[in-house]
Image (cartoon, rainbow, N blue to C red; front, top):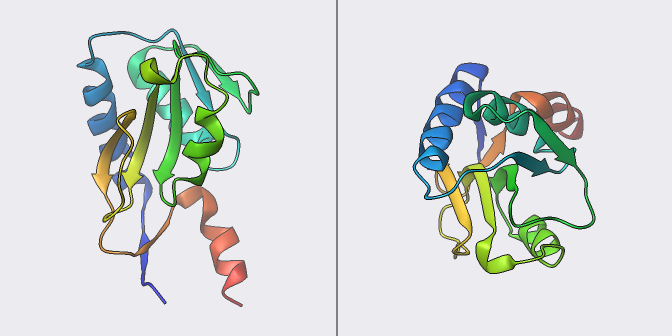
Length: 136
């Protein structure tokens, strides 16, 4: 069983700053952010503030490649696989995450702030209670 890596709010602020700098350096801009409600909503909001983006779309069935997609972690790749099939132009799509699971093959559309430590399970502040309740 993998160890846990608990991430605190200070860590999140640092990761959001790194990610926002990477996105800002891209040769394009985004007027909206799209995300999933479970893991991506909080990082999407924080990243939107850093990038000056006011509109966040949640749990959309059709996703424009003109939007920045944000999630907390690229882990198994399952979310990416579900999302990419809903994107109008996958080659022009950007999938931004705070963490990317070490040792995985990353899609070219992925940009991330940091790789995970080994295979540690990342526990974010917004899912800490859920994680702890499953440990009982």
